[in-house]
Length: 578
Ligand code: DGT
Ligand code: CA
Ligand code: CA
Ligand code: ZN
Image (cartoon, rainbow, N blue to C red):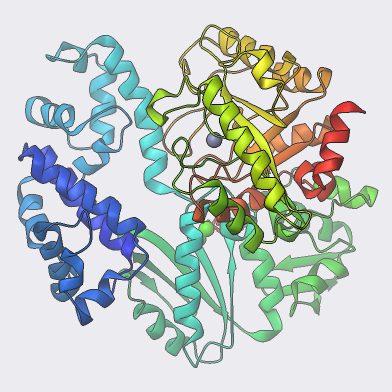
């Protein structure tokens, strides 16, 4: 089976999970876990290596003989025998238990062995009954954190992050575009609307040969199971059980179908209501004028004409949530949503001085290749000791290095002296004001004490916004999609403090963060607080996540004017002093 590296890494990770659950040797488990990580990040295809030159695989650092064997087995025999053997004694549903944040395989195994818990539902019931806190090694507090974690795990199970959906979507498009029966193919649903997580992918195809299209769909390399197959509609599961729906439509109703299946449902309900008032009817086949018993089709081939005959603008897909878009349309105030090409600089990234993988020079070269005009180097401050955070002395040295570096640059490209300075648990900044005063760009972040009370965390962030040297708060709520809830923070107070102190807020483009979320972005826009979309890159490749931040910003209704780093650096500086 030809698999991409992510799919291979997932299987190896699953093996590690199952081994850990069954109490196997910890060195072996670690070897598989490390292997999975190396595979996921490796630039060349393991499938290709297995086919062409298997000896290459064991030469890769972090891939031992055991891992290499499993990879070969998976590619050549379609499965890993050891996984099948383990699944004969361990129900597959227990893997869900391992996704609960804070519940390691040891605890999961204890729950399985003592209380026969196999599913999230059973675990929830046992926690609610208070059975779990009776077990050795489980306190009442553990029980509560398991309950909190179940909600996250359940959501994580059914929806995937937009960036992962995007990777899958691109391989699906590539596969189906090669199919001769496919005349046109587009993506719809929550993916097209840019939601931060996607429940399933929706594909729409124009073709006069639906059966051929469906045959081709079933030949997708990551196909796992066909759920339904009708005359024009087919649903499959791909690896990792994710669902993909495909519909085949005719040219003359393509626009109507695309509009319908893009949703959202609430947006479509509003569109239909609007049509009714005009004596018209909208469905997935077209727009129809209703005249007594007669229905005459007046639009359908393109999405544009569907909206146009209803007197509505062609809403960007990211707006279609029945939030404010109809009001904007009525007022003729539809925002022109920001695009990636409008970004001029990136103001949050790390280097080898702390936990980044590239040097300043390498980050600069990569930023220039991506067409940027300026970047800020913002390594961690000393409190983040695991990342070798910078002391006052080291950060001043780094800034001298940046000064020297700028002198070697002949054109207008600019490297800014920055720091991602921690907001201390007790409040206050991790570096003295005299040091922060030397920086061009001070980001303040909460990395520690995230479990503090709402009041404490809010006070810390508001305090940072009041510091005269701080320009911006990074990832203001700290959430990690599907993994960690936001910390308790009063966002109204944060917005107010940003306004009062004329500060900015970050939209972190890392696909696991996307923090602020879309509704927060919209709130910041209303309050005229400039946002900065940042990659928070820890490597050269990390700069490319900017695109995900753009999708999120568009969902928040942001235009270039709402996002500071669409402007030249001088403009950003002026904003703080004007
Ligand atoms: P998801 O997959 O949960 O992330 O969210 P969506 O929005 O992609 O939802 P999905 O896949 O169930 O359906 C795709 C679109 O098709 C949805 O946004 C609107 C449209 N649609 C699906 N079922 C219905 C329905 O029963 N009524 C209406 N009005 N629209 C529907
Ligand atoms: Ca969907
Ligand atoms: Ca669907
Ligand atoms: Zn950072």
